[in-house]
Image (cartoon, helix red, strand yellow):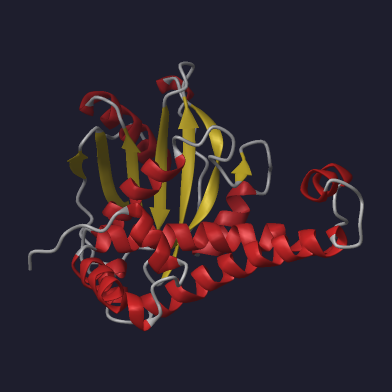
Amino acid sequence: MNLQPPTDELLCAFLDGELDGPDHESERQRVQAWLLHHPEDAARLRLWAADAEALRARMASMLDEPVPAALRDAVLGAPGHRAQRLWPALAATFVCGLVAGSLLMQFWLSGPSEQLAAGTRGGWVQRAALAHKVYVPEPRHAVEVKAQEEHLARWLTRRIEVPVKLFDLADQGFSLVGGRLLPDGTGKSAQLMYQDAQGLRVTVYLRKPDHDAPTAFRYEQQGEIGMFYWIEAGAGYAMVGALPKERLLALARSVHEQLVGSARPP
């Protein structure tokens, strides 16, 4: 099928429910057809929806906050009772938009595209690369829980239902930044982020593997992003980064050796 890729603006409109009316039926069908045949973009929208849900949870308390005097004066020019309604209205609009987007994505993933998002054998590898591309560039919110927080490993282990180990990559020049919880098909996954002295980041993606997933140690290149991925000890692992293959392999070997408790290469 020859489909034109939708722009990010069109994908955002689809996610926010702006294409629901009859006037946008053709655009909505175009986006649905594209996502049906391009699971990597469906996975990208799932990440957007997850972020929207996290923002909704964190910003909901704004509804009860008083209007800042500076904002009130900037909008109305002087204090007034209308400003007391303005801030809750703006916050409510923002939160409602996020909720609508999240609900829309849940509805979309409950349809045929769920099988594509949950993926074929390599679907989780695509999601590992996508999560890396989304969060590595973030200057301030790259991780959900910082490395210094002791509950990081326990929290992720409970959420994804596989043991999460915080790997020591200091010998390779990388230190742990922190981690985050991610949606993964019909379940959950975890991402650990590491950074070297020059600010270069790599990620380790962990998930509960599918029953028929191969366990072999494999490499895949996506543009500048390289990935070594394998399944071991009841979990799937992907080492992701914009590094030469040899250096990325050294990082993947370090993770593997810490998992098996020996120096045997994979």
